[in-house]
Length: 423
Image 1: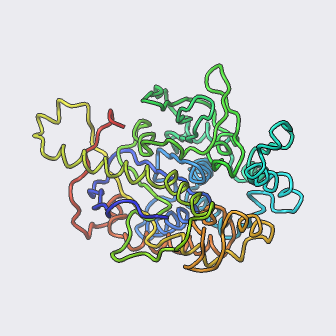
Image 2: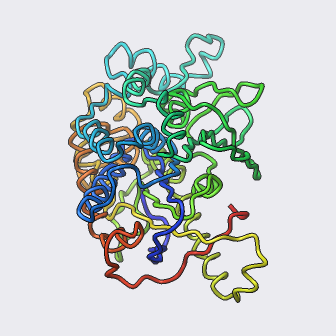
Image 3: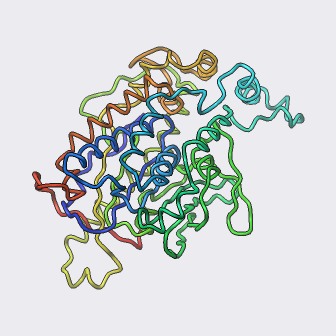
């Protein structure tokens, strides 16, 4: 379910100065869309004669977006080529690269998980019967070790290719939302209500934690200071997704979402009858992955509008600084796209999802929202990449203005001021 807020007006101002940040949000398999957007932007940059190195000095990501963010940050010196390589990974994805799809693997995780939901009252004494998640994502660790070269980060930062990389995760142990970051210079950690930042040496375990979709993938243990905690998907309790890029020094931010920011006029077809577990779970995941970003963008717009009313003298007396943001999000419902590709999932996973109510095909499929986060299959991911490319090209004028590539061809409103202290 992707319905969020009314369509936001453009937040880009056409400025081409200041440190640029890239924010990639969560969404499981939906994150393939992000790479389509970045592929199109790289092509627009080549057409404008822009350098092939990274145009983003600060890169931040959450959940599957953190995986894309880290893979690109670790090749910031050859960013154009890195985009192509990560696109290739998404274009050829199979579910077994992310989680076990074999019958034995499912018997060890999915079947006991569903059994515990139904008969946990009878099995509570048998601790060995308590699975940690619906799926076993151990194959993802193998993929990440091959795909993300964290050992390159210190040199890239020392050479000035990258200013900072941030990965967010949510602590089941403390209830806090934590931004783990690695930076070229000494950037003081920040603390807000129920969220904090920790400077550390990033690694694959941070990505596993950030992308651990609740209930679906197991939590990961990470150190926070002198204590250990169990962490899950960074989209949970993420009240201010844009915040890390700003705290790490970005003055302009490209935000790539993984769900529609608004619905077109008219009623969307509703499925009658009592909602299945899959429908409820899909609704909950949409809330976790999508709503916080929409609210944060709405808050940014509201602050911008308020500050625009202040005189230059009044703005000079506030702890505020200008932030330019360009938002690109899917123009189509990804639930509907996922519904067309349910048959491409491995038979074992289809059977497991049927057990919680994922049925049908196409726009009439039930529970497609849940499946859209787990559909790591090339037919679906390629369609998402193509959609991302199309959406970014449709904003070509705004993209060129945002990066300062060539002549500006669109007059954009001045909505660039936001608060560094409020986020």
